[in-house]
Image (tube, rainbow, N blue to C red):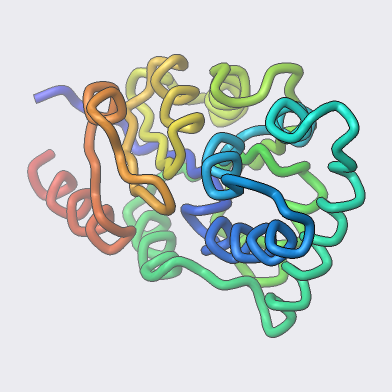
Length: 222
């Protein structure tokens, strides 16, 4: 059995926060009003991408005159209205992070979301204390599915990518972590894994509680 060091890096949206479903609901509302066809398909393509790449996919889908900035602002306003009571967290987040901390893991975060917003959202839920390194999408030139953000996170964590776990939900995120040479744990959110995702993921678990159970067992074995 290959020895895995105690380094782990998380994506944020769709892994820590249940934001992807919430944001998709907002876009569905706008799609109904503005007559946007196949919004689910388009949204699935942008999961895990940086803002500039997301914008381009919307323009490719709806034409060069599509007012992405205006509609994205509307979607964001709807999102924060729905999340006014607090960012919705995925089941098992606190339990997993607290366990990892107690087991001596170094924990990083690599999110396509801009770093200021990442810090704000994690801080608002009292989760910043768990992360040694936080990398936002605005800190790298190439976003996911390029490996840059994970390579930077590993470098700042002082971790060997090949011995480090990446916890991801999206196809783009899994591709990025795999390209960085990491041990990929996929926890599917909106989009279920296809054959390719299964082939490049080290493990696939239904939720973070299952991730915790696996890592607890691995700790006993090693």
